[in-house]
Length: 82
Image 1 (cartoon, rainbow, N blue to C red):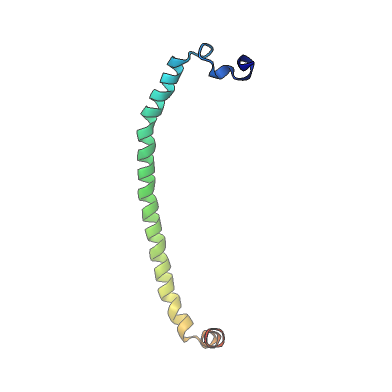
Image 2 (tube, rainbow, N blue to C red):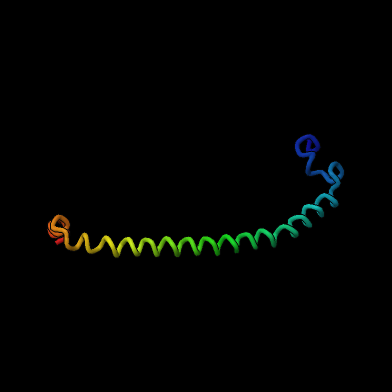
């Protein structure tokens, strides 16, 4: 019954040890490239996040005086947050 259910897992049908060894060697050969790609993407993402934070800080510094000295925002702040 096992022969009918899982033929790919049987040792004799697909080369067994040789096929497994090839998979292991390919995995070990590709692994360092995957780690390097992760490191490179981490550098780019770190730069992107820094640029976004700088843009947000600049926008906040421009918007803050508008909300502080606008009569509408002053009454809104006093009405709801006092």
